[in-house]
Image 1 (cartoon, rainbow, N blue to C red):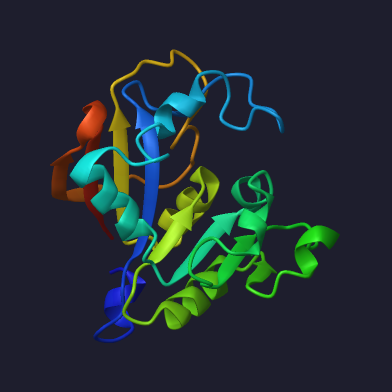
Image 2 (cartoon, helix red, strand yellow; image 1 turned 90 degrees about the vertical axis):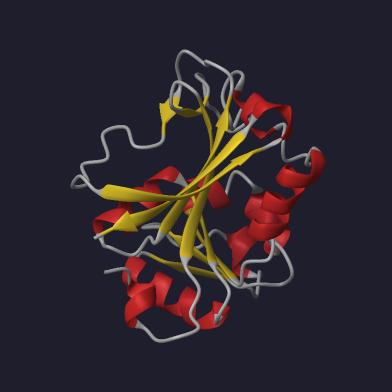
Length: 199
C-alpha cells in the first residue's frame, strides 16, 4: 500500500512526471554536463517550454503546484539546483551519497540526504494535501523498490530517439502492476498517461 494512504486523510500523492520517447528513452545518447538531455533529448521537452495549448498548460500547472520536491543528485545538480527554488518556494530534498556541494549549501530550501524513506516522509509532511513532485529515473526506481512512489505520469512524445537512457533500464526493482487512471491528448502530439502503482 502506498505510504500516502497509510499516513492519513488529506495527504497528497508522490508523483513522477517524465517525458519519454515512443521507444522508451528519457534522454538521447551522448549525455554530458554540457549536453544534459543527450543528443535529440531536447525534443522530449518541447511541449513544456512554453506549454502548447490548453491540455499541456494544465499538466505544467499541475506539477508546478506541487508542495515539495524529491530529486536525485543527477537531476538536481545539472539543473544548477533550479537556483535554489524549483517553484513557489517549496522545499527540495536531494538524494545523494555525496556531501552537499558548496554552491548548494547556501540554498535554504534544499536538504541533502541518502535516506529515501526520510526524504519522502519529510516531503509529504511539508506538502500537506498537495502532491510531491518526484524527479529523476534513479530516484523513481529507488522509490518504487521501497514502496514510496504512488503515481507515474508519462508524457509520451511521438519520436524515436533510437538510443540513449531508458527510464527503467536495469532497475533491478521487482515487477509491479499499474492502474491507468488518466489519458490526455496534449497539443503537439504528446500523450499524457497517468498510472497508479499497485503494491
